[in-house]
Length: 114
Length: 114
Image (cartoon, rainbow over all chains, first blue to last red):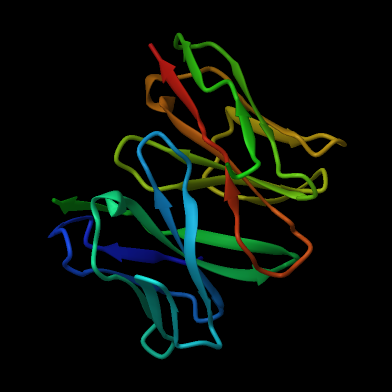
């Protein structure tokens, strides 16, 4: 089955700096890659996603890049703010056998230091 | 607010007991997913239902079972509870009518087994 690896597990940055989280996946059939943000005491919430026919997607301070050949994708957060502090999960998804199968990475705890 | 509701928010019980967690998906969503998140762990996929039928199973123990009812709400039953079952349990829903798309997560149920 699909295997998603996520690095680093923890990341501390100064406010205003950039943060990068990287994920790799194993199943070349995966074609949808969402990123979720989980704040303390809450459920994960989608912040950005990318489909396999796109190499890069940007939404204000957040961007995601996808390299299908290397089977890795990354989340970039620029001009980090304290409210960006949270756990971030990447995921790889594919539609197979009549259902959407989603495999999550192990999460990155991001701390933005004011 | 994702539109997904979960009850109860907290549950404290003893080893050997049985509990039921409840999830109501977003209005119109046909797919329901259950995940387990242990302390400092990622999201472990347990099981998925689509329009009342089981679609996929992940790392779900035999002591655990789930079902989705005609009104599309879902229940996760955990029996013969062990200390290691203490975790956050999340329910997520998606439309299920498109091949791939966002999952919307509920706020979770925190289960503590003493």
